[in-house]
Image 1 (tube, rainbow, N blue to C red):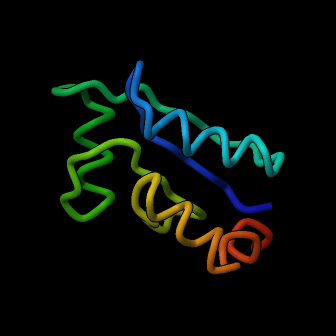
Image 2 (tube, rainbow, N blue to C red):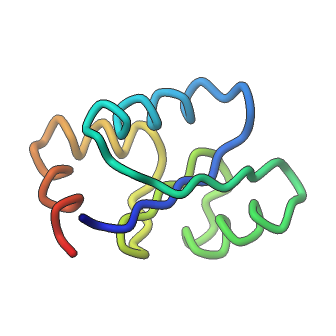
Length: 86
């Protein structure tokens, strides 16, 4: 299975939505608490090419975007293939 990383903040509905989708698929992921101004948030911004919102999701090191992007990949039938690659 692919390595999945997700940068989140507490009480973020988009973060919760993304984690629910991954949990529903039985996907293990590493979660990073990334509040404004934190080192984790700065890392997420750098890794994602400048995106400042949360969540920021990475599959095998590739930035795939946020919650909407994750859902779009799933609806297009492309998410399972990304998650299975390793």
